Amino acid sequence: MGPATSNRSCRQNLLQLAWFVLSIVLLSLAMSVCVKPWLELSLWKIFRRCVSISSLIVLAVFLRRVHHQSVGALGLTSWSSGPRELLIGLGIGSLGGFLLTAGFFVAGIWHIDLFPDIPRIWCVVLVSLPAMILVAVLEELIFRGYVLQRLLSCRWGLAVFGSSAAYAFVHLRTTLVWPGTVLELIGLCLLGCLLALTALRTNQLYASIGLHASLAYWARINKFVVGVTDGRLPWLVGSNKLIDGLAAWLLLVFMWGAVVVLVRKRST
Image 1 (spheres, rainbow, N blue to C red):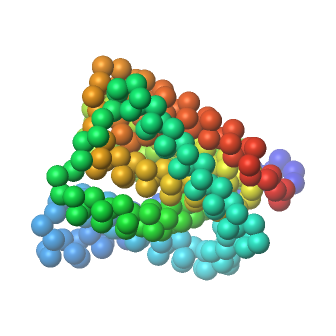
Image 2 (cartoon, helix red, strand yellow):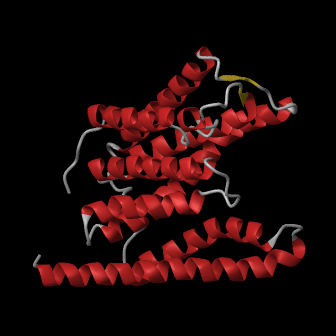
Image 3 (cartoon, rainbow, N blue to C red):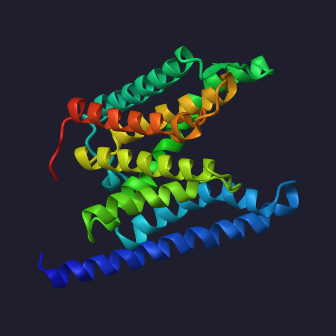
């Protein structure tokens, strides 16, 4: 592919991405306005909840009408290796979450702080994993399946960092707190890079889905059972979200090393 053809392909994919994002925003706004009279929530909170549904709808329409592809073309086609890569991703993410949590407990930085509603904790433990897998599938299809693939027509670095920045921005808290917001933004970007590199290594989404789901599940459980004993070094420890501190960032690097060792690289 020559430079002119490559530049034309890049511009076309960037334009499609712009329309993709705009379509999600407009559909989410329309849905939010329609359901607002029946919900006692702010329009912004309703909008954020509608984005996930809108993203799935817009993705399906774009794949069918614009790209003439199936969902599998985004990275769910290699069924033979899929279960193995999914389990490896789940294992690496679970091990990483366990090591970080155990290390903070041993160091006295975290302590057990159970949510007072014990039945709710059990509900979270049992229900959150399948819920997190569903969320991981949707978000990997959007960010690593669609956005990453569109940006690859421009530059490899732009694809990895651009899709990761978009992922971080969407997940950032609306309440800005210093330095927590900056640390969380960095952690989300690094997590996005880990997931993007994992998807690129296999040209599939199974391993990144496993990583995504297990880390989200671990962070969800921590929210209900972990308290911070020593918060004097937020840049090092972060919070129980597993992404907003130097220790968590080093853990993401460790997990990438585990991916390189355990997940077979597949060419296009």
